Image (cartoon, helix red, strand yellow):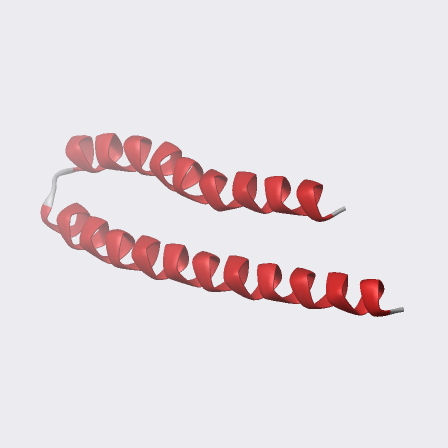
Length: 78
């Protein structure tokens, strides 16, 4: 019973840390998106298309890091 409780506490701590990390990543992405939108508003259509094409892979890679970390931690816990 105690081992299960300890495992639950570890899982909860890991979950809290992962959630905090995801919130931080989301905040950073929000700031980057705001900067992008400011630049896109000032850019012409061709330049805007280039910026948009580069933005999607950047966001995907930034979100993939926490997802990989979450998967690794869950594998270790389970």
